[in-house]
Image 1 (cartoon, rainbow, N blue to C red):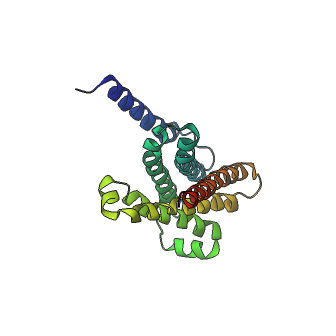
Image 2 (image 1 turned 60 degrees about the vertical axis):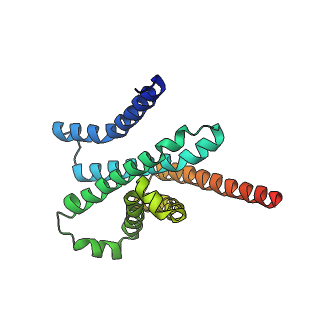
Image 3 (image 1 turned 90 degrees about the vertical axis):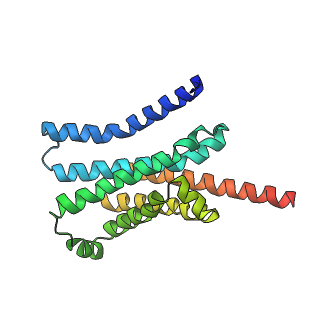
Length: 205
């Protein structure tokens, strides 16, 4: 029988999944009510991209949060947040391919050549693809130490995603600057942690 603690953990996880679904459900409701404004495709493209970046940054924040708080709880949600980041990034990509390009997929090669922000965004999605595919425990066991090395690619994806958003925005740069600042803090926290671990290892040796 599950203990009270087990039921609480399960309830928290279900609640976390429900929260992650809220943006998508809100879009569906706005689509149903016809409330996406004068340019529905642009609205869906931007909203899905924004949430993909937010979930990616939340995923990257879990390890520093564990180190700061001393609790392992945040790590339990890192994989979930990463998968939602990939799901929203895939929705972002699908809206661009199906609605923006009207299903004329060969046009993407022309856009990749002419629009650098699309190339960087595509690189972010492409980098997230193997991470999503290897997010299972079976993949972790099969890859061993290489799993951790592969999943460091998430930081490259984060940089590409922020650059993609930065180059996309033409006028108001406050939001891209906010995301860039958060990413720099998270990258800095990782570098400090690695430097500290290296010093401890050298002193221990």
